[in-house]
Length: 346
Ligand code: SAM
Picture (spheres, protein in one colour):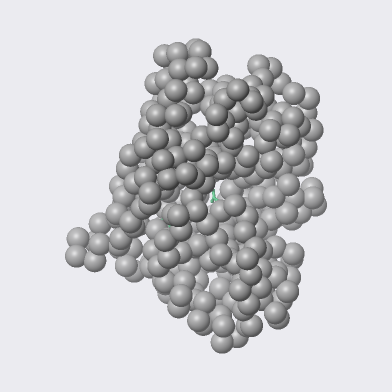
């Protein structure tokens, strides 16, 4: 692990943990480090996206300062996401810096959500920074379907990335979005493949985030239906295994692996929500499914002192809502939220 970098903000006993008005301690921060991606998954982005100008994006130093402030207030788990986090120039510098909080014990876990396309290059360095588990998003094992979903992605490149991560000793979990008529018939095979390679699989329901130029109703596949179909082929047993995220897991007798379900539309998981999400522009979303947000970039750039920043964190967490209410609007066929998942970070 790289040696600690300065300036440092250790977990500070004098600073109160961030707890929202409903008594939920904020222990999990997701940080989107870029809105850019090298793929264009059809449920996530439109083909021609307008990306943010550089001046709007937090520098790696600003991101590091915000991460340190959250960790000082009780964040134990930090997930770096995007866009595609591994396409951000210099991103390994941020991993290197944040790893000092792992070394000090203030942070329990530093992890990553990636499409895997650049993983081959970065896996060893990630492991050196103390990354022990990552999520790789992969919806299909069919090269042509992969190209259709991602618009131009290369499945072999992702598989090579997964193999590199495993060689580096990083545990990989596969995340797959269940898409009606696209991958619904191969989800069982995807699970057998993942479990065979020692990876858990989590299935995700498509969420109504961002205008993607396609009708969500065409993509939406309730996981209750997927689970019922899988149960015809496999023996699924409930477990109380949790990873700190919203997935609920079953054990699959035939493969010995774990299968997770993230069901924001058919099952609300807000009551145990310990998460907030920071975008690459320093906007803090207290809830994935609500518009309310706090502008931490303005605070960072206006005030060099930590006290002002911590007061802004308090004010933001005091506004964390009780829950969200995603609805795929069947009449207007509009997304429930205008922002894309690539903005908020998955
Ligand atoms: N590029 C990285 C990746 O592919 O994992 C991180 C960002 S991506 C936005 C994070 C996750 O969000 C991916 O698993 C992706 O499939 C998922 N995702 C994107 N849009 C979604 C949507 N509308 N509904 C459900 N999941 C979505």
